[in-house]
Image (cartoon, rainbow, N blue to C red; front, side, top):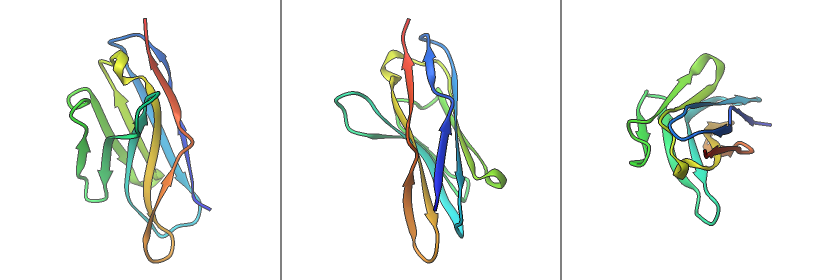
Length: 119
């Protein structure tokens, strides 16, 4: 059973910073990519940032220059450093991992962590 466990959400003032973490555990062959998505009330879930095995990163235009994704392969953990936070960054943030358990990759999701940016 593959599990993704997130941590690091909370309440922060505009302009502040937060760091999210997501650790994958369980029995699997490999992780091909890890990333973060978010969903604000009344909106669809959207991509925030991804990190592939080759070291490539991809960011939503709305977070470029403010958020940084990184990964510790040895710990099967992905991080999202969020700086210069804005009220519009308020959402539930979900960790995603594309994992090969047997032959083909499947998507796994964390339980979500709330990020609230408010004064």
